[in-house]
Image 1 (cartoon, rainbow, N blue to C red):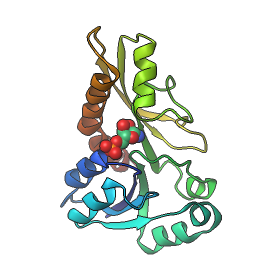
Image 2 (cartoon, protein in one colour; image 1 turned 180 degrees about the vertical axis):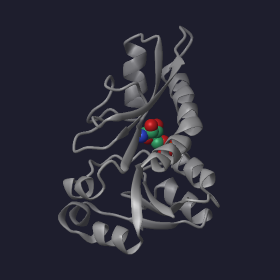
Image 3 (cartoon, protein in one colour; image 1 turned 60 degrees about the vertical axis):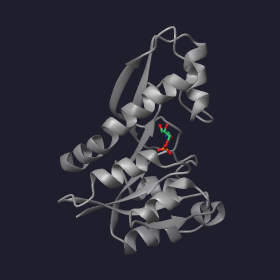
Length: 189
Ligand code: GRF
């Protein structure tokens, strides 16, 4: 069984789709939801779905091997970032080569990097009068949003669109594709 830990800092709508998709899956299981915010919606959602949760804080996440020990004890082999706002430390990237996957709500390499998350992304795309946006799913390296691309999907932007309507279209693409892309990456390794 390939066991996954999902990292999220917010609502966790992507995490919920992934949990539902792999519920009673033959070879992939969501084992843990990790968050850096103790009152994040994703934690309540995970508990409601019977998935264990772990709250992390900066000093241990970056300064100790606790998280590595937890993943080893739980036999977790893939890390999925679904709206996680902290940079992943080198020790995790070394331990999980090509096994840490992130989703970004824009067509990388454009509109990525530090500070480019959530509505910041959609406002920048809107202000630039882009004709399309979309999602990027990529392997994670030591820099925000710069790892090898795995998958992208696009949505058109019309003159009537606003940052909020762009966000809604992009989120719908995320919900449509993320779990299946994770499944394919695992199946191909
Ligand atoms: C999504 O927009 C995703 O692209 C970004 O963080 C957001 C997560 O949303 N990485 P949710 O918490 O899954 O609803």
